[in-house]
Image 1 (tube, one colour):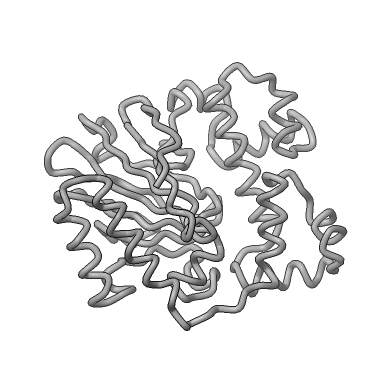
Image 2 (image 1 turned 180 degrees about the vertical axis):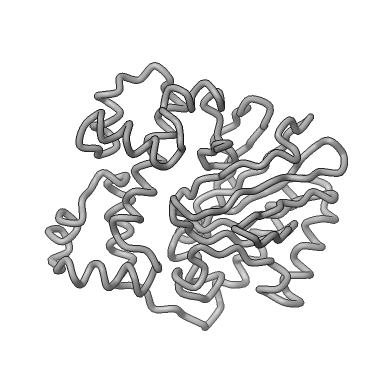
Length: 290
C-alpha cells in the first residue's frame, strides 16, 4: 500500500492511500479522514457528486443523515452511487465524541461491476446501507473495521475483502461503456459527445443509449459532473488561477459559460464559493450550504 498525499482541509485531516497493485484496476484510492472539533456538525449542506461510486465507513456513533424532499434516512456505513448535480438532497452529520472520523473507498466503474456485482445504473441517485447490501458478509465487514484500532489495519481488512472478491464468478458485462469512460478519464472530462463519437466510431444515438442503459445518466450530464469537479479541484489547489486558464482546462466554452454553470449548480458565484467554503472540499467532493 502506498500513501500518496496528506493534507488538512481546513479542520478536516485527510490521508489518501493507494490500494495494492492487484486492486488498482478496480479501486482508485482509500481516504482516511478526521475532523475535530467538527464545526459543521448538525448543519445541512450539499455534497456534490464527483462521478465516482464510493463506500463509506464511520466509527464510534457517527452517522450521516440524508434529506431528500420529505424523506430522511441515516446510515453509518453506506454505498453512494453517482448522483445528478441537481438531485435535491442535503446531508447532515452527527458525531458522539465531538470528533468525526471515517474511511472511504473510491471505486472505478470496473470496481463497481466486480465488487458490487451490479450495473452502474442500479445505484445511480441512490444511497445503500452496506449491511443491507451484502447481508451477513457486510455485517462482518463493518464489525471487523469498527473493532480494528489502527487505520492501516482497517485498510488491510478492506484489501483482504476485495481480494477475495476478485475470484467472484459473477460478472457484469459493461465492457461497451468501459472504453468510453476510460476515454473520458484520459481526457479529464475535457471532451464533447461529438468527440466521443469520433474516437469510438459510435453514433450519438448509440452513445446516449449506452449511457442511459449502463449509467442511468445522459453523457452530457455525466460530462457536466466530471467537468464541474475538475473546476472545483483547480479552484481549491490554485486559488489564484487565471479564469481563462481554468475555463480552458475544464472544457467550458468561455468564462461566462463557466460562471453561469457554476451559479446554476452551487447557487452562488465562484468568488463567493471560494470565500464561504475557504475553497474547502468535503471528502473528495465540492460542497455548499445553499
